[in-house]
Image 1: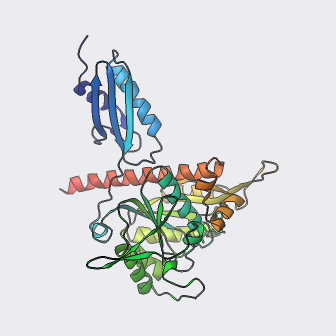
Image 2: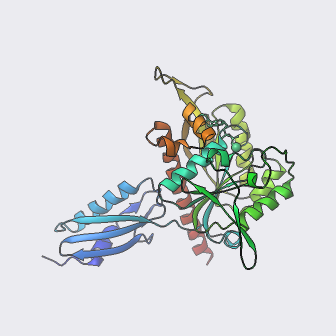
Image 3: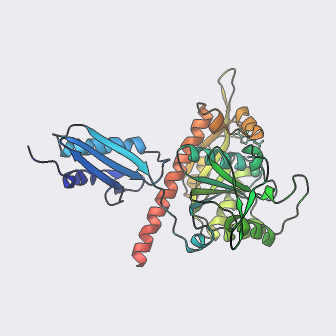
Length: 363
Ligand SMILES: Nc1ncnc2c1ncn2[C@@H]1O[C@H](COP(=O)(O)OP(=O)(O)O)[C@@H](O)[C@H]1O
Ligand SMILES: [Mg+2]
């Protein structure tokens, strides 16, 4: 019987592609360890995100490829780990050194569920094992502390050179909110430079530690303040939240165009309040119409990440500070949001892989 060698196993794994990144696992540097013990083969595959939607498929493909190449193989163990790759950006490296990726959640209109989506995506990614931060930069209505059930103000630690704020944490998500800077009831009048100054402070003066994903809840709208903000924050990409009806889509389009103008890639569109399932009859009602978000994404040639139904439990989760993804994880609604979070993570990995190729070409 020919000896099973590491080279043979690695060659087998060259035949397994990451379906999102369209390259084989060896070229992607995802094969981290191969151990051979008699006929037992153990391989460690390092994915580009713990929230990989294709984890099981990749694992099964590895087993099949090894079996095909080495019919005499006995037990095959594929261990799946993950290390989120960094969006290479000089400005980000300076302002947010420990943060690998920064994602803005934005909408044209207010009230479409932008903050609800931001919170639940953050909690979902954290549940999958990613290190997640959330920066509530919505100067008009910083609602994330309420939605995450976080009271109190961040502690300030005295660094030898500067003061650093410590984010508050719940559900595995580190939070900073512009609401921490202002009194709850006092009306605040913001101008673009003020908002961007505060956002800058919230990036550089916060002890974020290591983060795979830092999610920004941006103020709704596409005016000067929003434009200044998206130019201030070094963004990996943006997620556009809309409801299905035309009045919301029109504004979502303006939001998307604003990101295009400043060369921030769109990671995808989320349609919130997609439909309502009556709990007594199970009948579906398309309250705001059907398919608007998907059609919009197709028209704009950006990924559609998915739809989230209207559900009173989502609203309650927000008001009580218990996000549905955490509080009712077995619900269909939570499952939909988790699926969206995985698609988002995959898009980020795809972007980072593409831009690393750009760099290679430049060099
Ligand atoms: N899918 C949903 N089902 C039920 N209520 C929702 C849903 N999405 C958002 N809401 C509720 O709608 C209101 C507005 O949502 P919010 O996230 O604050 O919007 P935005 O940040 O866009 O202004 C909140 O009370 C929230 O709980
Ligand atoms: Mg909001």
